[in-house]
Image 1 (cartoon, rainbow, N blue to C red):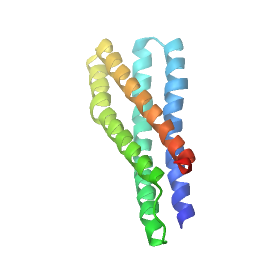
Image 2: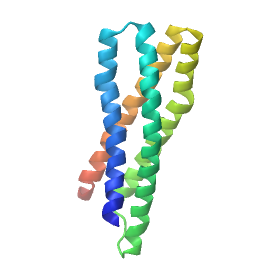
Image 3: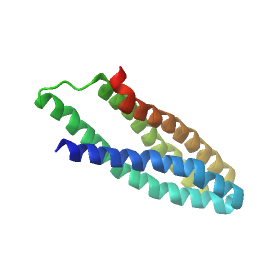
Length: 152
C-alpha cells in the first residue's frame, strides 16, 4: 500500500512543479514574444484557471498521500525521518502561497480583464508570477529535502 501512496504523491508533485515550470519557463515567454497584451492576458488567465483546477486535485492527492505515509510509518514500527517533517512544512507554505494566488491574485486579474483595465490585469499577473517563482524555489527545495534528506 505504501508504494501506491508514494506513486500518488510523486504524480501530484510532478503535476504541480512541472506545471509551474512549463507555465513560467515556456508558456509565459512564448506569450510575451508572440502576443500583444489584449491577447496575451486572456490566454494566461484561461491557462492559469485550468492549471489551478488541476493543482487543486493534485493538492488533495499530495496531502492525502503524504498524511497516509506519515501515519503508516509509525504503525509499521518506524519513525518518520526528519526530512518528512521538513517536506510537510515546506508543502504547507507552498499550499498557503497557492491559496493566495487562487483567492487573491487570480480574481484580481480576472476582474481587471472583465473591466478592460489591461495594466491592472498585467500587474496582477506579475504578482502571480512572483508567487509562482517563490513556489518553484520551495518546490525544488522540497525535492532536494526528499531526495537528499537521508543525509540529514
